[in-house]
Image 1: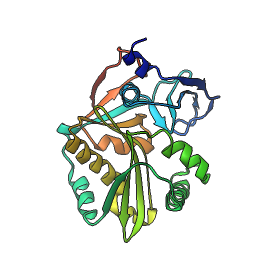
Image 2 (image 1 turned 45 degrees about the horizontal axis):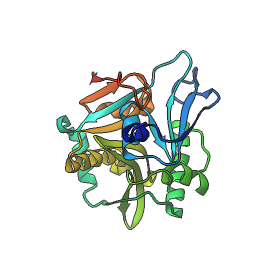
Image 3 (image 1 turned 180 degrees about the horizontal axis):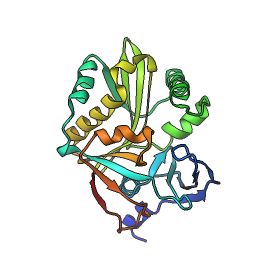
Length: 250
């Protein structure tokens, strides 16, 4: 095995979760394929992101649901993207919001903000509420970041009001997870955070923002359709697979 092959085949533990209820299609069951990679690399991380995988901590995964293939991957074409009037307003509302980019960290402010956001979403959108522990946060968001994982912190009134977890891959930025303070909902931080990713990608000369999964008709993913032009990927390839193809999303 040459060095290139080794980068695409890091030592890993592969496993599947038992089926559980789908959050996006309640009548369906979810089954996930996982690859636990203790020592990852930019090359491997880029390869799986390009092929529709996601990363939480040291866990890389994609769905292998029985009888359902509705999860698709989307990415923004950075150079072709033009913000809408509504998106420009979100930028203006955040002209005084401070932004810090750094390696992912974990503080009490992170944990409190994450749990406050999820409590809000449980009331607003019927999300299942379970406070995250320090161990769970570390496992999901700080471990496995290596050189490519970053957090974008949003600060207002000397308070942490938003955390955007991202990976900077070889051809773009992979959006991992974002949470914010619902007391600052007027700032449209979800929209603003993606607009900032676009600006960061332009600064770094990267062509894409990888948005993760999208399910047609699902309210939770509808915001992603506001960032056209988009490309869509159907299916999930192995890191070595060469059959994947991104096409225009309409």
